[in-house]
Image (cartoon, rainbow, N blue to C red; front, side, top):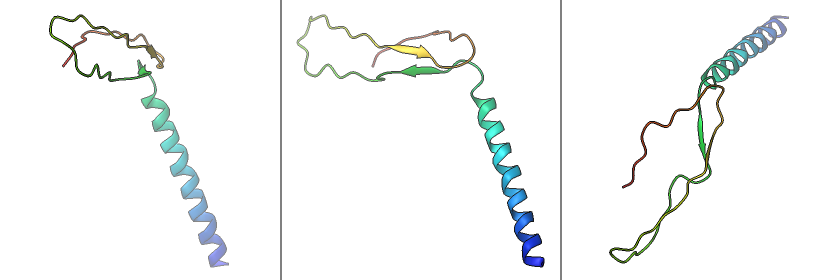
Length: 74
């Protein structure tokens, strides 16, 4: 009997904990979220004075407007 009550208690606690974790994950997904197809591109060896370019494709996977404020290279 005690074993059954303990098992039900543990099960209930685990269900409550799991639902709270799921709710927290849902809250984190609110707002803008940038999703890049590829976040780095390696040109390899490039001769001096050669113009190179690459297009990075991204999308807003979030629920709010995504503003891109700064883009840079290294």
